[in-house]
Image (tube, rainbow, N blue to C red; front, side):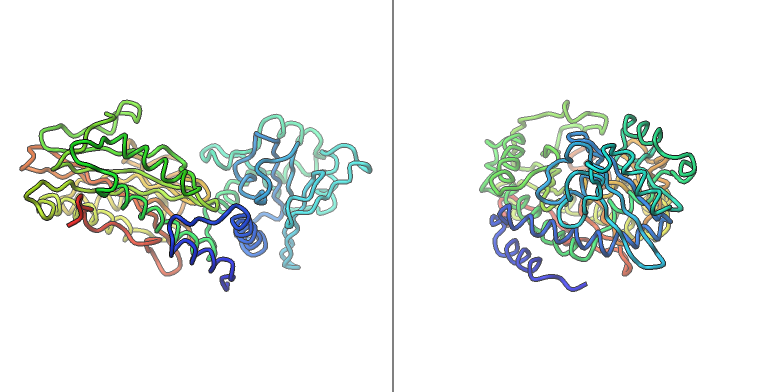
Length: 440
């Protein structure tokens, strides 16, 4: 699909000035344009792929189904009263109907199909639509393993099933596969935005890991964390999680993954010779990034990082290469995980992989490819297969023994990666060498 002039204007705005983020009104135009494309071009494909001809989403204000929330127009920050959306796909006519069993149109894409004066009961108005369309398979958002697509609450489910005629009850089934597909699948428009969004994320980290922010011997890890938070706020953006900045250095034991975020050392002073690491992501135009990078604080006599750290970092890149080479459409997350770990260990590496889908949510729906504490596979979410046109936080690490430090270090990397018909690619490059402070 041809990218509109509005998208091009967005990309130019971001590319030439990382601090010049679109004002809210122009953001709304982008959000609604992308949503229109997803409704009219993507959703029919996904309903056909998963075999649904009707999808019913039900939410109440401030208790929104996470999937329905991604379908609201830019001017709707929440559902209103009880909001019910019905999508009906007629494959023979190649049409998609988008109906709201609500008092209002839901933006320009979903028309109100409820006349309360003629039918005061909202549930019966929904049943009237179902009876008229007479679908073969009706999807509701409930799921045992995927929280994002488990959006219908018990009250709404019970009230709906109570009024639904018996003849339609056998047609009700979990919309898990359809809902995951909606959440995980990226369009061409979204990928153009994503490339620049990752570029902005990298630029913020580059500034954070520089002498404009870090004064070795004075600046603490928490100083950098709060600089990141403030920078994002000043740019008119948001973070979807609180950033972390941590230190590995000679003479200090490698910290276990078991140490919780709340227990990690804070306010450690950054010193020459430190290997520092951040975990940072932003939210913009309903998409999310998630990135981990490393920097080395040069000692006075140094012009580059020690060769043993450069080699350790290269091992981290090698684990990335092994991992992404095992991507294959239809493979489950667990299959990709186990194949990658076996290959990495066969090369003498000590990898750990804990990659998650990335997109409309930070920890999104789709195949989970390992968790840091589940390196043997993840039941349920890890059994879900890899589909094309999906984005992942390629999150992993490798542990490397550093004799010069008399300890192990952990190279922890995370970058947004895209899987499509042409294979794997990073959304916008990856870190391939240590950032140095000061820059060499």
